[in-house]
Length: 152
Ligand code: 4NP
Image (cartoon, rainbow, N blue to C red; front, side, top):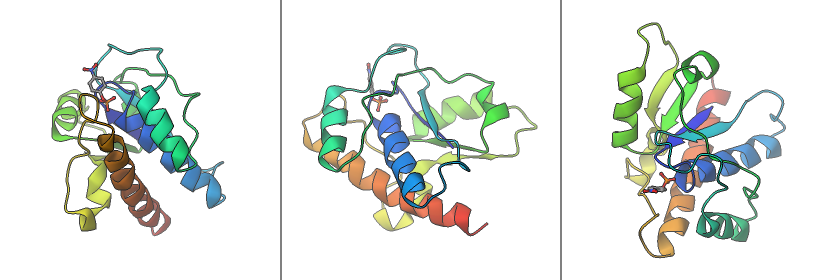
């Protein structure tokens, strides 16, 4: 399970932390590999944005240990699910997708159709509420994703 955004410091690490916590809670930690990355290189090696860490912590998720990395085409060999936070990042991944990739490459929020939202809004330049909005969407999609893969 690979979550992808632009910088790998706000949205995808939030998905990483929330989904990892859900997987652990359901006793599936040994079975599902969870990771995140960015399509951009700007923040490689950095921890998540402190506003993301703080918002997640208020809901009991720990993500301060995560470090940003950039997507690499090798990720298509490693991950059966590559889930992008918005259309722009999905389009960048589609361009790199090898013809033989037979995993799921889609928007993360396709697993939260009830949200009525298709992209996780980038909170980086906005006010603090954006980080809680990210968490609301990520929690909903994480539940939907786990339901979908448990039902396979
Ligand atoms: P993310 O947010 O893609 O959710 O990690 C962003 C982080 C940094 C930048 C843009 C979006 N930036 O322009 O540096």
